[in-house]
Amino acid sequence: MRSRFLLISAMSLCLAGSATVLAGPDVHVVGRFNGPMEAPPAPREEHMPPRPGFEWVPGRWDWRGHKYEWTPGRYEKERAGQHWHAGHWDHAANGYVWTEGAWGAGGAEVPPPPPVGGPPPPTNVPPPHEWHLDRPVVSTYWPTKGKVGTRVVIHGKNFPADAQIEWGPTPVMGAKVEPERIVFQVPPGAQSATILIKRDHGHDLVVGNFEVADFDADAEAKAAEARRVAAAQAAWAQSQGELAKNQAARQAALDTQYQQRDADREQRRAERLNEIRQKWQAAFLEDPDTQAELTLHAQRVAELARAKDLAGVSANSKLGVRIDVATQRENDRHDQRMAALKTAFDARGGAH
Image (cartoon, rainbow, N blue to C red; front, side, top):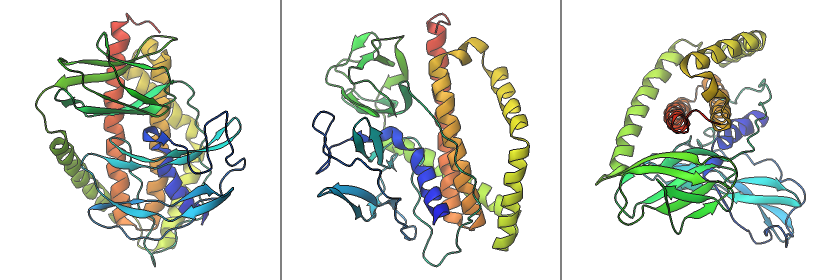
C-alpha cells in the first residue's frame, strides 16, 4: 500500500504549481477558520485502468460535517496542451486548508493507478527527499504566443497577494493572483513583450516572452505532445528489453541500484554540480531566482525517477511511457525557464 501511495503522491508533488486555494464546506480562510486541525488520512488506493482520451483525477479527502470524508476519483476528458494538476491539503498556522486541483499546461500529469489484477508494486522503496521553496517561483506559463485577449495562465509557488503583472513596463489590469496561479489576458493593443511579476521586495520576477501573433496554441501543443510520446515509447521499449522478465529479479536489480545510488550519491552530486557550473556562470547560479528554479527542477526529476522505477519493476508500460513523457516535458520546461532567467539576469547587469 505504501509504495502505491508513493507512486501516485510522487507525481502529485510535482504538480502543485497550478492549484487554486478554495474554501470547502467547512474550510474557511484565516481569521474565520473552522476546518480540520489534524492532517487527512493517507489517500485510498484506486485501481483503474488507463482510458484513451481521458485522464484520471485521483480521489481525495474532503472535510464535511467536521470530519474527513472520501470522494472517489474520476475520469476527465483530455484537454489539448493541458494536464490535471492534483490538489492537496496544506498545513496553515491554524489548521489544514485544501488547495484545489486544476487543469493547466506544463508539469507532469498524474498517471492512473496500476490496473486491477496487475503485479503488486515493490515495497523496498527509500523515503523521499524533503524539498523547501519559500520564495516566489515561476514554473510554467501558457500559451507563449497568441492574439490580443488570449488568456494566459502562470503556474508557480508562493505568489504574493499583491503581485502585479507587467507587460514589458506596462501594468496589466484585472490579473487574478492566487498563491500558485496567476491568470490574465493579453491587454488591448499589446505588442510582443516580456511578462514580469512585480514584487514589493527585490527585483521583478521574469515570467518569459510572449509573442503577439495569430497562432493556434492547441495545435502546436498536440504536435509537441505527439513527438514526446513517440520518443517515450521508443525509450521505454529499449529500457524494458534490458530488464529481467521475472518481477522478483527486477525488484532485486532495483534494490541493488538503490544501494549503488546511496554509495555514490556524493560523487553523482559533485558531477552534476560541475556540469551545471560549466554551463552557467557562477554569479547567475547564485541568484535566488535561479536557485529556486534549480530546486524545483531537482524535486520534479527526482520524484519522476522514483515513479519510473516502480513502474519498471511492475512492468507497467503505459504508466512508464507517461512518466517518460512527463520527464521530457519537465526538462523542456526547465531549459526554457533557465534561459528566461539568464536573459533577465543579464538585463539587470548581473545583479542579484
